[in-house]
Structure formats: structure tokens, C-alpha cells
Image 1: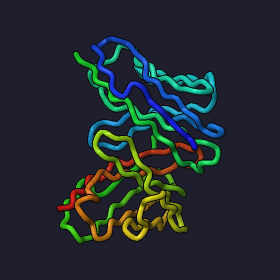
Image 2: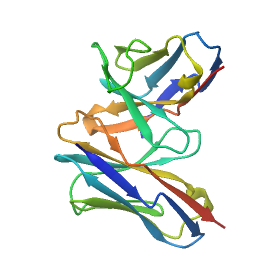
Image 3: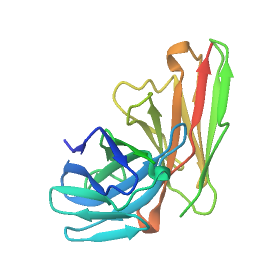
Length: 111
Length: 115
């Protein structure tokens, strides 16, 4: 059974304090590892897809990396507007586009 | 990125009535769409997989007669909550798969409140 675990569940940062969010996964034949941002009362917003170990993608203050067992979302010099829940999801090769989601990390960035 | 819309964004209904939620992919065709339910401060729970032109596939524990799914075209899937009860109150989110890129994009969600 595919499993995705995110840590920490919640993270409080001061503005400018860089940190990383972790996503550990166990899937049969990873087809893709996805990161989403979700604001309260809204649907998830697509951020990145990673396909193979060693791959990295960046967007503004966010950088996602992937190994064979986990993915990290690095946040450099965060701003209060980066506060949101970040969701990680994995698709296995038997999933037929179905994603297995982690529990999410609630990030709060204080000015 | 690709855009997925949902309508309505909020709905309040009386117990026993049925509510239909629409999910549209606006700038791409989606053979596959998914319906999720999300409880406060929880992650998304997959309810069903909607495939264009065929019957939906429901996850274990999800009543197919209560949550009717229709995927009549490559850009539209609907979820009908039949005979809604207060326990059906939740945040319902759809997603659509942009097949060439194998990426899943989410709608903004529909907040259902059953009185």
C-alpha cells in the first residue's frame, strides 16, 4: 500500500528564517511526486512535480528536491504570504493517476 | 498552470435535499477527474475517480448511491449529493488530470452546509 508521511505537522518561522519541509514516501514504482500549496478554504494550488531521484525544481523562494525515499520543500527567507498548508502527494505506477496524499504541513511565517 | 473551476463555491441546503456540484477543466481536456472530501485541518480524502464515458470508481466506504458522479464530457464532471444530511457537510474538491503532462490540477472547492 502506498504511503506518504509529512513532517512536521506544523511549523512556525520568523520572516527570513529558512527551513525545510519533509515528505517521506513508500510507493510502488514512483511515477511522480507532487507538491501543492493550500490556503484556508481553497483548493490545492499546484507547485511542482518531481519524477526521479536527484531532480530539483525551484519557484521563487521554494525549492523541491527528491531522493528515492523522500522529498524536501526548502523555503528560503520566507515571507508572511508563504503561510499556508503544503501538501505532498505521490503517484505509483499502479495508481492510474491516483495520488496518495500526506497529512500536510501547516506553515506559519510571522513578520 | 491549467485551470479547474467548481460551481457553486458555497451551498447551504436543507436536510433531505440533493445538491449538484460541477467541476470543469477550463483550458484542457480531462479524461480523468477525481472527487475529494476534506475535513477541517485534515488532508484530502479521495472519494471517487471519474472517467469520461464510463462509471465512476468509488473508494471503500463511499456510498455510490449517495454520491452520484457523472463525467459526461472531457471538461465536465458532476457530483450530486443525494438526500443530504448534516454529516455530509464538508469541503468538496475536484481535480482534473492534464493527461499529456500527467499533472493533476485542483478546483477551488465547494463548501457544503446541510442544515
